Length: 198
Image 1 (cartoon, rainbow, N blue to C red):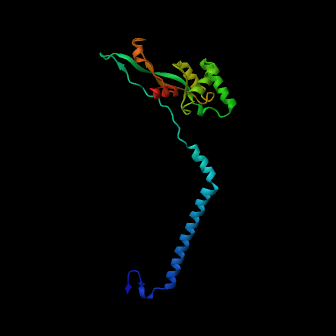
Image 2 (tube, rainbow, N blue to C red):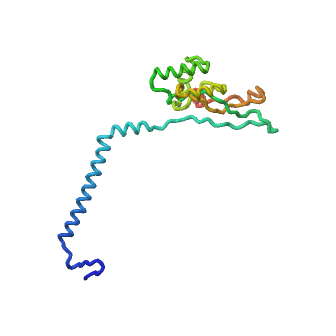
Image 3 (cartoon, one colour):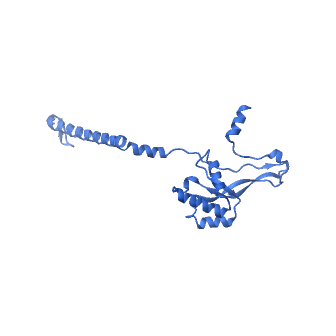
């Protein structure tokens, strides 16, 4: 039985040539398997510690994102409690210099330009990062625009320090009905325990 297109004759096929082709394909497959095996061995055994350290560096962290809150209106639609944006002086602790001397220098410079004692800045950082380490620490709210410009012009000197817009409550009626509107703050461990006891 002869196929004219391929000039191939089944009756005259050489079994030695067929075996050689099978051996070549088998050898290539074996080499590919050996290459994959050694690559996996290299990644898991020899480089395992390096990749483990990188994986542990990719951990999830919680970051607090402030959102604007709703307005409180009276029955006539007049605003009793509203929102406004404020400029807040913030420190991102994870972006501060790693060197303790440089870090202390940056915080001392911040204390100087913000008119705050260095002890208070360190206390705010300690208190605000106790629960959520990755969130920015707000040192001062409603900072003057001159301070914003000064910090932006000298950003290299104030590594990890920024002025960002945050939302603040606005009370057009002053203290009217303050006992009804109250105040809002984050829930701490003491509040959680008190709620569980009730």
